[in-house]
Amino acid sequence: MASFENALRAVNELKDAGIIEDWAVAGAMALVFWIEPIPTFDLDVLVLLPPSAGPLVSLDPIYRWAADRGYVAEHEHVFIEGVPVQFLPSFDALAEEAIRTAVDRQYFGVDLRVVRPEYLIALFLLPSARTAKRRERAAALRDSPSIDLDLLDDVLTRFKLMF
Image (tube, rainbow, N blue to C red):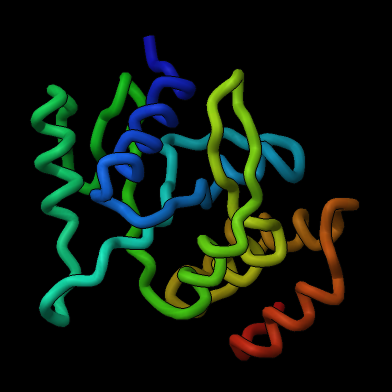
């Protein structure tokens, strides 16, 4: 049986081991902390990686860590405690800011960080990610009571995004 709590503990181990600098739950799973949950297949984890010597980003240290613990990698997912986890390296200034400003939460006693709803909206509205499903999620977040409209306006303006 899949254990979301144990998957989160394992991601915390990645940070404790210095394999990643920081992380935050993003995507549909992050919505659980801000609005009504929706069905999702996987756990999206935005990660800040330690500085590398070259311009290429490699998730190889994460995959080696996973293999050492018996976790199976299949396509873009690592199955950790039965949960398909997709590690998404910070790909631009918006993603990095989303991780750095993430909110500390607990899930059944496990510490985690969750991307703020204002940043989730912005990530959902990126041209490379903009689908009808993500626009619907962004609209649901915008209408939620947890949203800081001033922060949302600031983030969308600075990153040149719109609904």
